[in-house]
Length: 468
Image (cartoon, rainbow, N blue to C red; front, side, top):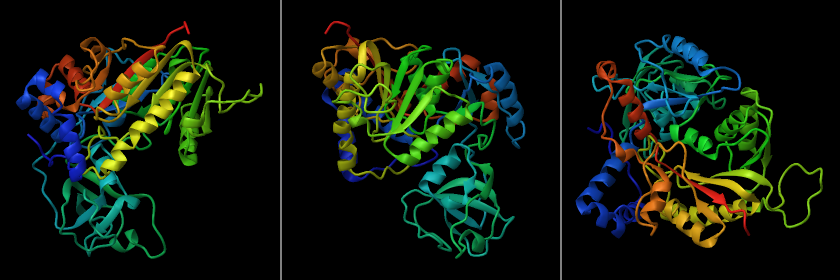
């Protein structure tokens, strides 16, 4: 049963998605009613957070067993939270923490704090409220007051408003760390903690400064990607769109920090974040560059001493293209704001990046393409295009294969669809989790739920043939 409303889209985007999920291939395979049921289920799932928080262990510094023990001790500090920390049988460098919720019996308080949508989504995944995310607070809010926190999912609340009558979604209760006048100080925006959440609708530990050198907060499919690329010590790896560095640092860890991981992003502040994460996790083989991936192929001979982009053809053993995308698989998201023009702008950009990646890959090398979206145009259609455009590429089985197969609608064969991996939030029935149901669950069932109830994500693995 849904706790939040289904995700909403602009009308033209909704019409576009409806056609995607009612395409002829899909309806022929499932029937019209089943296809429609799956689509409506997906819309409900997207507005709710996944049932587990996934953290990747920095095995470069410590064993999973050691970090699991430390993490369990940290979780005991959270009032009212008594949950197991689970190891994953196939992804042996992650830990899973069940999320308790939605909690339907929380009392709402008269004093309200309204936060922006992005801040609200972070709260639903365990974060406290930081001042920059606060849009509005009731007239007489003082430091130490009990407040109810709501998300302005449509972005309609005016900053500094004393009350808000528009569409707002209840996120839980907390204690205000500041008064209203301090939050909206005329001397400029404050930073730091604004509301400490004590009764969130979804109860999950905050990972702010929790074992920062040992843990990296990452969605489960994002961890799967690096294992599928399977980098080996001593190899030269390219992460084409690497910010904020979760996958790049994972690749370096899997290589035992031996070899070279080139991490690129075209936005300077994001490249700084990659470098900071590499430093925090004590990884030395990552070299981060601020560069546009579409221009990463050198048309002229490079100087021998040149480290960074652009690169000569066939320079890399393995390439990860975690492509810029429409991001429709991210959870939770209650109101998707992008226009149809923005949504459809990603396919040509992805193809430019993919073309460069193929040329930079050595014969016999591995190219993994991934997105965190649910459309056909950015996923299965890109695979169909790539196989036609680049005869040197072959689809390859993925290991581990935890998600479902590819979605019908792009003209791929059944065998090709089985080689793809699509994480579909609609693959599991919407259900809450409380302490009692958690205690009654078998660990195998919890792992199975974690595999399915995650963000929407897509992965394809290609091998470049050695014969030209």
